[in-house]
Image (cartoon, rainbow, N blue to C red):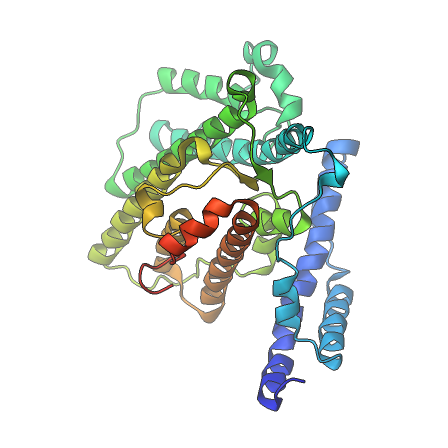
Length: 378
């Protein structure tokens, strides 16, 4: 039985929580409809219909208050639904299990490469637009017969060409066009995109090693978190997966009125963002061949990971906050930043639980490095 004060607060916060979750559910449904329409039926969906938002909000509110009526704390119930439980892998024998994990890992790799292939395409085009003028896509003449087979495997955001095709077009554009004379702010923006592109390249390279190293090293991935909770807590941190849905229901973090226009503060934020971006790239390099998503490739104990357990998530959040802080002009924008922090916290929590249940060495590591994000605090 809840204490009266706890029940009061749960009743009070139930409305805003279900208001957001109801929209999340509806936009997730329409987002999946969009993906299926584009990729399986080649139908272009122009917009997300809003007719189902309020029915799904009523549904989520009904479930929330039903749990309260049953003396179940809805927040704890949701949190426990993300608990990791060791997987039986459909009763597959111990000898075949490494091969099954490797095969499931290919699905994770495809989803990951699909997402980052889109992002790096956008980054490269933006770099060219800043440094060499407007980049207009032209039909590739040489590249389709070289890389066309990749288009169906990992299509870009245009659903026509993967970034290999764009790389060749971009190189031709850079060779033929003189570089712009950049001001300091444009240079910072370009360095941001360059570092993001380097980070993505490192991630994809380390992931490719995981896929193909089995051919010469016979070293298998230890375990994989191929569960709904694992996919959700990871997907909310990537676009165009669930993150694309979240962006529709949270207000734009960039308010219309800048908090400050003073040059000293503006340059301070740009410098801090660049340093955080660089440190974030170094954490990915720190992970090296053990980098992975939803997988246990072993425990990293050196470098940044000797201080806190999730340095990449901390630095990524801080970097995004620094990018947005110049225009966090209202309570809605700060709520959006809070949502960003919460989703990375959920991902870190699930990762801790998965690794603790998958790898005994991680339990020792947690004792050696007890802090998740802030040394000496949390």
